[in-house]
Image (cartoon, rainbow, N blue to C red):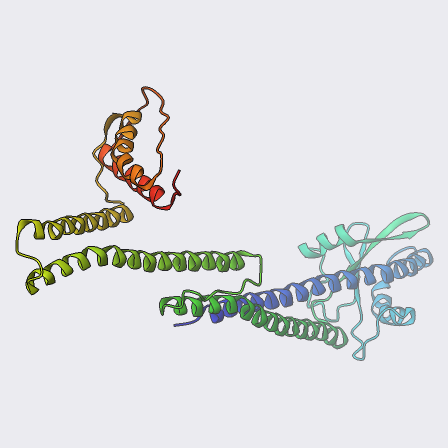
Length: 372
């Protein structure tokens, strides 16, 4: 069974992998798009200079006759002279020249794969979006269209490859850092839970005094505090149980001692076997029965199954009856019992249980009250 720590670490690792892969692809895509935009902008800037050169050609010739040959032989030389493009293969930026009617009159065909046709839909769209007007004598005599080649130069390919490698390396480093932090985080989160498990095992073995150290104020810290409160409640309950058993043993010891003493005296012949000698034994037997019934009542009360026979009773009269019953005992102890009651105080209760509770309270009060 996989532990909580490994489950958490696995989840964090999965998130780190997805984040690293997503970062790599988004970075590569963004760089590719920005690089394509940069190349197109570069060709537009260089194309504006080329458009002025072509405008001078028109002014000198009055037409585009022969411009195709000039276009093919001068483009790379012009761009190289301007310092815009450097390529070891001679594959430079490419342009297409359209006349006023949109016909192709000049094209650097190298690498275009037959795209120098006016019927090309992509060419018309490119001319509308990025076309550079060629002016001669203040009027437009043509349009120079920069074409972004589909095939990259080796230098450009190496640049994009280096960007992808850098993005991949950055993603790997980010994944390693996330994995390290995830391991630390999983350990920090799992450690308090392991302490709770250990404390639970100690409690189950009877070590009710064991507590968990509360080191945080988050949900795990609150869980540790709740566990400590539960352990304290169990410890108090266990102490109360032991005290209860000790009290029961003490209460049972007295009548049992009386019964045993009387029976031994009768068996030894010290007391005659008469109703008078058996009377104390009988009384202590009744006392034992009352104690057993009290134990049964306490057990039912603790489990929530104590039967109650409720009826409408006048509380003042009920209390007065209990007081009168204990008044002789109070007189023997030298304690005066006074009662102040409200008239007509009706309640819905079990009169027998109320008398029992009040009788126990008054008996304890008389036992620990000084005379007076």
